[in-house]
Length: 639
Image (cartoon, rainbow, N blue to C red):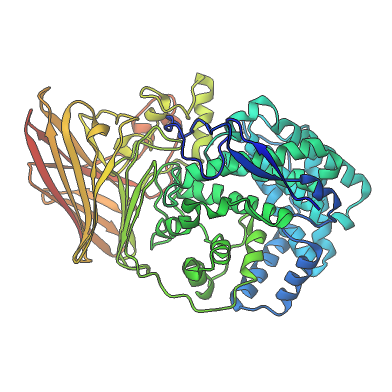
């Protein structure tokens, strides 16, 4: 049987391409490839001859996995499987009806798509592993619910993509147990609500883009196309072939060169989950993922995610990333794919802690396929202490260890006009003694809550131009991050913060970053050196040279999970029984605290939003005379 065919790749990015144009303001590259470039694509017609299940696992592989649940190779897999069944039991008890309902912004049904996916995938897994009728019945109910929707909101295609995978996996894994009528309705829904809209011209932005949308949407559509291939072969063939070409290019761009995810750790979790899904769909159907997982950046990306996890249950939460740490179930894929168990350290640590395991992540059953292959070998704590990830949005992380009391420092470079970015260039997070002393702020309800206020104004949160409304919203401005501002002005969105030195030597760990281009014409030079000293305290050295345009007022800002109080000697930070002192030397500074209530910075949005609990804002002010340089050293020490 012929599995592959060769075509010319015209204006589509593929593997091994180096002729890429510069990135645009939103982080999307033009897809330009020599017209003579060749790429092998699968003969998708082989799917028509495959029985169900055909997504992720064959019937024989499904049976092997079922046997693993009875005689697991490792206690880790046994615990994960038990937790997965418990989640399915919870969904059955709740008996939630999935409804066609938009979020606060009025433009997404993504929450409902995700509810459907979580429930169908978990219950389909539980049914295949246990045969429990209750799991089948509830899965069928959810499938009925969503196939009765008027559409899956392809105008915001993430909604249709996640729903597409939800329905495809339910159809495929439960095929023999579903009624003929329901299966017919599923085929029609997948065709009209997912596959056909995905090929419309309006889909070109995500289809050819280089953000998480590419990964999520191509994975969801490919699953749908594979599941019902024989019912619409031409459409399904077009969807799968396009996905392989376009996704390969996106993966090359997103993760280059060392696996850092430019949109932040939260979107790494989202995009990479679906990338693993996409890779697994291809490998199961065609015996290869067409080299996508072998791209250098992707093969290194698990290290980025490990270092983006702090020690107190929070992530390095730059950009639109939320602070809470996700589980690292993706590690099971990376350990299996690259025969390297080192990425399992964090997840095994959580599993072996004895605490309840959270398997509510909607793609958790996917990772169980890989976890079942783990033989229980011991995994040592990573020895690396300083991580430098080059990227469009580079980061540096330094840590004294991986336990709660250890010190963790994350420093952000890059620019503000990249997808999901904030004006947080030169910002950092810092943990010591079990407390995050320098943190980030997050709006309750996320950006849908903000979009709700912007919609009547006809404004977009996702414009990154200098005067856009994004930069007027509290938590997006530089004053809402642990960075510097000049004369209380916004940062230059296209200005780039570049790491000029990585510090990894006895007694010092961190980095120097040049943020001159971020701060505008009023300074001729601005650098920050942020480092852990002697494994004991934080030190920030800011060197600012004012231009001849006049003196500049500098604001040094700290957002903190701790309570802050300004005194003449410094800022006293208190969290429970832990106390830290922030103190500056090198200039005459005035220590300050500021309000963390967006309503105190009134405009058409800030007056109606609130921050997640526990944020305080503090720092200090000083002046640099025209044409002069001031070097100010700040320390933050536990008392």
